[in-house]
Length: 500
Ligand code: AMP
Image 1: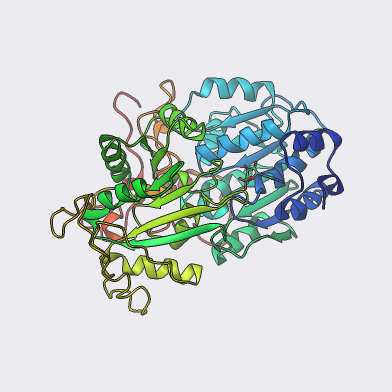
Image 2: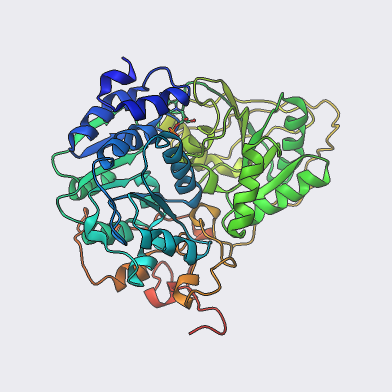
């Protein structure tokens, strides 16, 4: 199959050729003709499969046939994180370079002014995170009825991050006769139900079994004591042919600690997480993508969809709480047909998480011994017989990296820390001119308060507000003495001083 068989215009075909693509990827071959026909599409595709071009290429052709009016965007692409939104915008520029379409990127953490100017001029394509989009709408800057094409990308991530009420609200503001393209890396029942609400007679396209880890990633796992993780990481970084690597931690605090620790040991490492200012985030990611920075220690803000050319290694300093995140984290490497390598650390207490991951991927992750680090076994706490007593004792070869049992304190962060998985927004980088409500970390915190403000009350696919995913008890933010129940007013972000 060639691109020219898909029905795309000459200008788009030329841009694709300039991008160096020889033939469409399976998701592109399947999705593009349907998108061009104007029908709704439900796409199940992992990141790295080329799904962005799968929807942007035909959108460029569809949108070339009309003109944008002031403040009335003609299409809208919703992304769960700022990084993904930025990446899609970059893709749009590449693929749309021969078409004169206007685009605006609406993400938090940057000034409203530039965004307003673009909206006022009229845009063909709006690429946005849900929180910032609603901020613009609520300020009366956007007229949403003109949206002819809606793309909801990374839907399962939207669900995980608690954005679905916002997405539902946004969808309720659009023209009901629009075309909707709904993409998700995994298709759990909640996502299917949402798809039923958002889509009309969709064509389904699917290119990989849900949550199957990329075949091109060689995975390994070491069971180590929590206090040995940093030494173990350093040993691996010295031992492995690492060109560039992402190092995932579950908590923002650990991201900082590990990045600083690596830097103090002479490694070229920096942190990326949602508590950093947007400019710092953008700069760090840019340096990493350009090859100026070798190691990026990050939270799950970097787990989905980020496309870093030729990433050689991914290290999971912590096993994620949710097995899907394992697949997304390791999927940053082994992309575009290249081979990649992942190393994960599990502690003896991680049996439950390890068991869930191995259950999801349907096999045991091969165990790996790290020179100089005492191997451990996982505790028998999963009750399902998986991941138990494995890992074994590993070699002790006189430790260059100085491991020792009982020597190190456990590195678990304090119980009050919010897990990094739900934190795609900085707290201190809000636009200065914005009223207080826009300063809230919109892309990170539970979305229920905004959903409550919603005047339009769209029905949810599940018939109720989709639940934000729960983190393990120790990390779940909870009110004093309230157990699992958290009244909405307590979840509302505090207003910064001096703002009303
Ligand atoms: P995505 O899954 O959309 O994030 O795309 C992953 C990577 O594949 C990006 O670097 C794209 O530039 C690249 N890509 C997309 N389509 C093709 C294609 N048809 N041939 C080769 N590379 C592609």
